[in-house]
Image 1 (cartoon, helix red, strand yellow):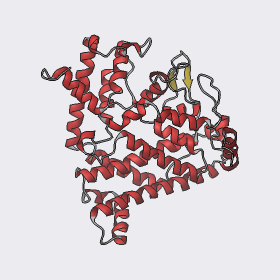
Image 2 (cartoon, helix red, strand yellow; image 1 turned 135 degrees about the horizontal axis):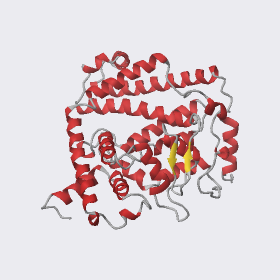
Image 3 (cartoon, helix red, strand yellow; image 1 turned 60 degrees about the horizontal axis):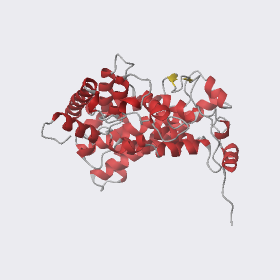
Image 4 (cartoon, one colour; image 1 turned 135 degrees about the vertical axis):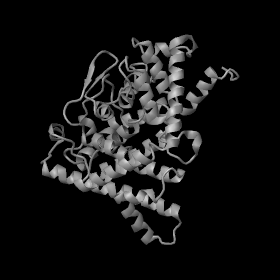
Length: 386
């Protein structure tokens, strides 16, 4: 009978097979609240598992990516998007001999702080909170895993490792921690965090493109202006001339993701060599991120993003949903602020010393799309049961 693989064995494998500039779990900078290590799982594996088991992660199933949940069963949600980002992150990390568990954990946590109704919901919450510190989904993700999730008696939040918190923090360098200490990120983030960030971009560009075509909001004729897409579509049509258009679109999206991932891996490898990166400290001291696309593909990908912004994210149906989201979230926020007694018990207590506005913001940001719609109906439709 073979023996179980334990944490020390996993750490030994990491040290043996990962690149010298990878983030090794046993070299982690630790957690805010010290804990005894798990005997069978590495630190980053434990972080990933805590994220998956959180309430905030489960709620992503009913939060908008672009299309609200009730518009169709096959459109991406925040949950499926997060899983797709994690899959791309793991693939890239594996090819570059980086820590897959860390890249996956950051990817799974990166959208925990998104409010209902996608980016339009974030914009509305930021306006509503403009005099109380504003709202930004990366900061809210950080707040969820350090303050709002309550699963352990020893500490607030999930007590994730520094490296995962760093990955969630993205463009910000300072955050307030619940015990009054300041989380500070110095230098460039880990390569695994940089991978998660660009995997997010690869996933949402290509899968929003796929959903946009599926919905009919954009079409193949419009996409002829996007060089990177048109070239791959023509190659697909040549290889599958008898395939129906849906098969050709699916294969083209698949090939486009592969093309972007391959370019990113090759360019990142060149960057690491050109800048003589030998270890994780070299990564932190680098003048800029080391994970990235080649200059040519960066421009092509930017053209795709501009197309999606103009033709999908500003489509009149998406704008209608954004307008509806603004009214729903504003109504809820003002109703709760005007009469906090209509809030469920404990909502105002969960944020500790935070302002009443922040507690209400936390509550609304945690809602799924359907819960926000139901709550609005209960409060503003006189015929609805409360």
